[in-house]
Length: 172
Image (cartoon, rainbow, N blue to C red; front, side):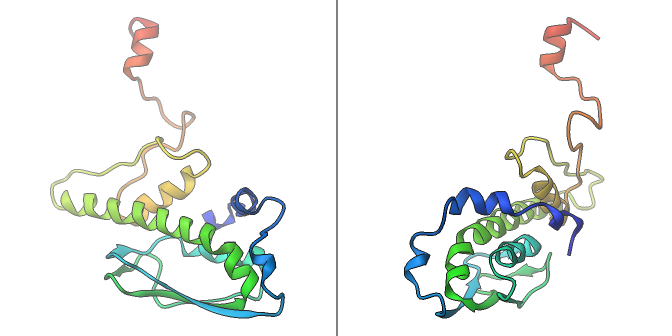
C-alpha cells in the first residue's frame, strides 16, 4: 500500500452517499454479489489502493482480488479485479471506486504516453499544480506512475515567477 493511500477516503464516500444509499437499501441486507472490473481500453493500471479503500471503508469483508499489478500495462478487455461481498457495499461503493480508478489510470496512461514520446531525448515531462482540488496528491502519484516527474506540490515548495507576478510587481 502506498503512503498516499493514507488519504482519507471518507469524504469521497460522504459526497456520494450523504445520509444513505436509498437504492442499495432496497436490496436485502444478506444478499451477496460478485463483480468483475474489465478495462475497455488499453491502460496503465493506477489507483488500486484507493479502490480497495472505498470498499474497506464500507465493509471490511469485501474481497477484492486483483488480476494485475499497480502500474501494469493492460490491453483492452483485460480483467482488472473481481469482487465478492454483500451486495449493498458493492453497489454503494462502485461509482466512487471506479471514478478514482478511472481518473488515476487515465492520468497515469496519458503521462506514460508523453514520457515515452520524449524518452531518450534528455527532456522530462513534468506535472503541474493545476489539479482537481482535493486530488492533487493522487494526481501527482498517477503522473509519476506513468513516468512523468513531479514538479512542485504547491506554492510553498518552489518559486515560480509568472506573468501575473510581473504584472503586479512591475519587475523583479
